[in-house]
Structure formats: structure tokens, C-alpha cells
Image (tube, rainbow, N blue to C red; front, side, top):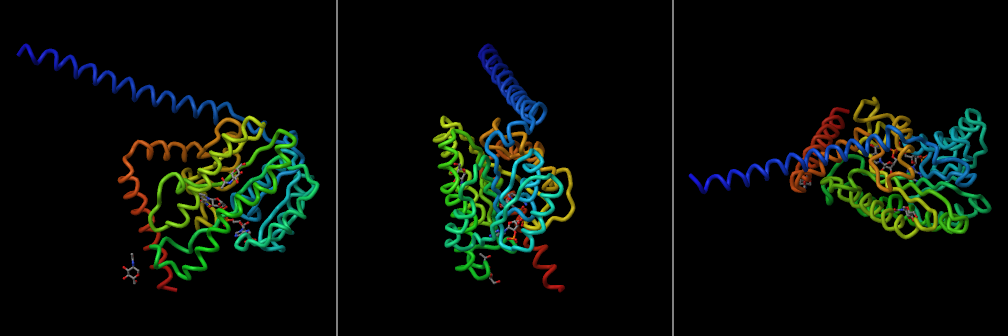
Length: 312
Ligand SMILES: NC(=O)c1ccc[n+]([C@@H]2O[C@H](COP(=O)([O-])OP(=O)(O)OC[C@H]3O[C@@H](n4cnc5c(N)ncnc54)[C@H](OP(=O)(O)O)[C@@H]3O)[C@@H](O)[C@H]2O)c1
Ligand SMILES: *[C@@H]1O[C@H](CO)[C@@H](O)[C@H](O)[C@H]1NC(C)=O
Ligand SMILES: *[C@@H]1O[C@H](CO)[C@@H](O)[C@H](O)[C@H]1NC(C)=O
């Protein structure tokens, strides 16, 4: 009986310690949310960083929303995507709506011989913000060897998701270093934080973007350059094949408004409070459970896709 008393005392302190630890974690979490999204503003982005913003993959989805939001802050924008028709349309929309100068460069990031053209297009511009947004994924989640046209997919996905980020940064960073200011936003994904089975190439390419951004932020922050890795969960766009925005799958406009508040405050961000909550919960789980959850999600997306395409 006597020996049970110290054991009970010990357990009491373990329990109290655990409750205190969890409470502290939750408080820290709430503090971050308040500091970034509650009190944060978009004031840290604007023409004071440099006249121009460059956005890759900017005629649709998240990229278009970044281009519009930055134009709204008074920045001139360079739009880079494949289709000149879409570029012309978005560029005249932005010019009319926000009264800022625009430029367009038609380039396919699936190939690697475009960077001289882009370099010429950017010559002489004072670039304050680069948004490395362009990204591509498979038609639907699939195991590696069963991805259709695999060799071509490997080449394209790596060019669009990885090479573009390195090369665009290569072009834009020297000017920023010279002026000792600038912001580079690399759009990664939550699938770069957690491995997502059935999207192996996509998930790994986004992890590259996340690591690259974190390293560069550390290398260049003393030079006044802020590099941010943006890790969204699902955003209602064509790429995600989601039409209707919901609270957990916001429209690209809602997402970008929220993500711009984090610039200068978080070098690595989920961009949107609900996505931050999801990622925080995931971070508490052991990695084998995360893998299982991700596999369950992608499997159901795959089943949906295959069922739909059989009917047609
Ligand atoms: N949507 C999501 O749920 C989600 C989640 C996490 C991360 N992300 C990331 O966010 C980024 C943007 O995704 P999104 O959903 O906004 O995509 P989206 O709606 O499909 O828009 C893609 C944009 O990129 C352009 N583009 C596509 N392929 C291109 C290429 N090879 N060369 C040049 N431009 C190209 C498209 O214009 P053209 O067709 O004219 O070229 C379009 O403007 C991606 O990096 C994606 O990985 C998205
Ligand atoms: C690839 O597809 C084949 C044929 O549909 C299937 O039998 C096989 O199990 C698939 N491989 C994986 C790893 O899912
Ligand atoms: C991310 O941002 C940094 C900022 O300098 C940039 O150098 C890098 O190329 C970008 N791309 C990736 C893959 O992180």
C-alpha cells in the first residue's frame, strides 16, 4: 500500500505535465492564428518592394488570384502561361480593373528552352515579387507504373514543378539581391509536407519546392529577401477538379487574400486558417497513419474518376 503512494504521485505529475503541455501547444497555436490572420494585413506587399510582380501560371486558379491581388496593391504584373489568348484576356481584365501596367510572356514550362525568352521579357524590370505558382499533376491519382504516358509525364512534371522554380529564381533573384529587397513565393502543397501515395511524382516535386524555399530563405534573409513556401491543402480550381468552394476548400481568391497576410510573418505557411488547422492535426499523428489517411483519400478520388470515365 505504501509503495503505491509515490507511484500515484508520479502519475499525478505526469498527468498534470501532459495537460500543461497540451494546453501550451493549443495556446501557441491560437497565438499564431491571431498574430498572422487576426492582426496580419497585406501591407507588407506592394510597389515599395519593386514596381513589378511576376506570376507563373497566372491565367487561372491560384496564380490568377495572386496576379489580381498584387495588381490591387498597385503593382504592375507580368503574366506567364502557355496560351496567348488566355494571357491577353486576363491581362486586359487586370489593366481595366486595377489601372496598372501589365506584360505577358507565352511560355510552356514543360520544356526547358524557354528561359531566354523569359529573360528577354523581364529585362530592365524592377521586380519586387516573384510568385512561382505554375504546377501540374496527373490526370487522376494512380500508382507510379500505371500512370499513362509515364516517361513523358516524368519529364513534364519535373520541368513544370521543379525546374521552373529554380530557373525563375535564377533570373529574378540577382536584381533583388542588388536592391536588398524582394519577396519570392513558392507555391508548394500540403502534399509536399506529407507524402501522398498515388501522387508520388507530384508529392515529391512539392517537397523539393518546400525544402528549396526553406534553404533559400535562410541563405538570403539577411539580404532583405523574404522567401516563403506556401503549402495549401485543397483549393477550388481546375487543377484540383473542384468547382464549388467550401469552408475547407476555399476559392482561389479567398485563399490568396488570406495567404498574402502571412508574407513577412511566416516563411513556411499553409496560407489559410482551416488548412493550418488540418496540417496541425496531421502533425500530431504518426507518419504511418498520415500515409494511410492520404492513401484512403487518393484511392477514393481515383475510384470516383475511373467510375465517371467508364460511364462516358
Ligand atoms: N488547387 C489546389 O487544390 C492546390 C493545392 C495545393 C497546391 N496547389 C498548387 O498551386 C499551383 C496552382 O494550381 P491551380 O490549382 O491554381 O492550377 P490551375 O487552376 O490549373 O491553373 C494553372 C495555371 O498554370 C498555367 N499552366 C499550366 N501548365 C502550364 C505550363 N506547362 N506552362 C505554363 N503555364 C502553365 C495555366 O495556364 P495555361 O493553360 O494557359 O498554360 C493556368 O494559368 C500549383 O503549383 C499547384 O500544385 C494547388
Ligand atoms: C496497375 O494496373 C494493373 C491493371 O489494371 C493492375 O492489375 C495492377 O494491380 C496495378 N498496379 C498497382 C500497383 O496498383
Ligand atoms: C523558392 O524560393 C527561392 C527564393 O530565393 C527560390 O530561390 C527558389 O528557386 C524557389 N523555388 C523552390 C523550388 O523552392
